[in-house]
Length: 266
Ligand code: T3D
Image (cartoon, rainbow, N blue to C red; front, side, top):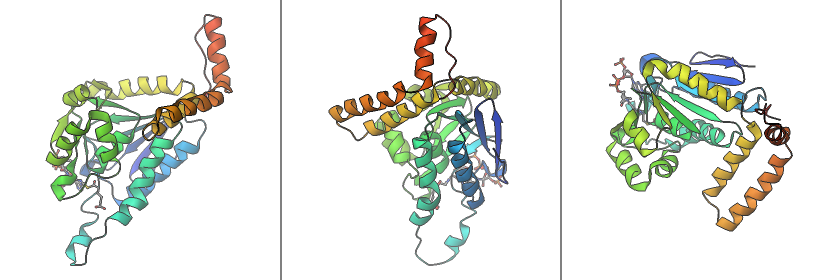
């Protein structure tokens, strides 16, 4: 089951669930309604077995400009000390954690600028395909903040600590071509081709052995804090699980029969 909301659009097509951030007038900045709706949409996508690939994209010319600063303007009209951590823990952290632990592929389709927590959201996806006019801005520094919502975790892992520090502390715009060169995105396509290329890639991902992908995510996540011996053992354990799936049997049988496999995600 899929449900669009006031601030997001949700659509299904052959195992692919596309969630479109839909506040184009503010470059899809996250207000509290959008954070609630996006959190629910991601939870629903995770739970729905018919969904075998999740695409996140933005309406209009932006992917997401991060926290909607107008939505929290009241905070700045008072002299009370600010406490930003609670908002981040309540809304952003569970969303980012779920994208990483969701046992299906998540594809960020970057149609424009991804700034602040919007940049973090893009980095938390498993794959990123970008239109030529997409860009990344770790905008936090411009408002005197620390990159949050996983940016300090994903950025150095994707591009190395030296580059990550430079991008984070300058808050400069990283355009699509540079993003491709430094490993921030997997592919760059012409803006006009982004929807079709996204659909093609998402269909391909949805046709893969979904459980094997989920277990691969688990293994990759665990590798960040594991010793080699632990990781080797973990891989063996996950392989036992993968070996019991119908898709494993289908993959081997198809190979021996010299025909393309037909994976079902079971
Ligand atoms: O709870 C907490 O606060 C902690 C959580 C923090 C998480 C964060 O994400 S902190 C970082 C918040 N985001 C930003 O600081 C980014 C602010 N936006 C920008 O720097 C620029 O808009 C962009 C670099 C993203 C894009 O620039 P540009 O020139 O392409 O577009 P623009 O003209 O600046 O923006 C277009 C409209 O979107 C504009 O509205 P207008 O003038 O046409 O009515 C602009 O005000 C609005 N907009 C853009 N970003 C935000 C926004 N409105 C509210 N909040 C935004 N973040």
